[in-house]
Image (cartoon, rainbow, N blue to C red):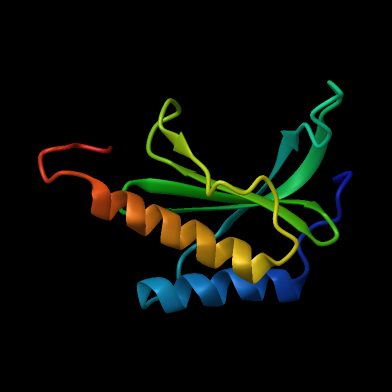
Amino acid sequence: MSAVEDFTKSELWIISTTLEERYGNPVELQLADTELRLNPYETELTTCPAAFWEHEGCKFIVCKTGEPRYRCQFYYRVHKMYGTGEEEYDDLSECMVTLLQVQADFVASQDDDTNIS
């Protein structure tokens, strides 16, 4: 069992609905647990639930770090990981919309000759 409570049905609905609105069709979510350092001044890792999905070669993850607290990032390869500029969100909808917008802005900023995958 996670040290942080699992995503609720309502939270999973927010994630799924936001993705369906963004991409125009349902997206398969994968649920997992991840270990995060919740306090930057301690070495202790905490098990947190995570929602993961892929779209057009990009991988996304949203982690629940508390009630209600969320962290997110997207990446193409392990050495190409990106965040939103916010460490943590207290609103899941804001977290999701910001993550998707930052990733869309990133793709739009790339040259046609640049391979991000």
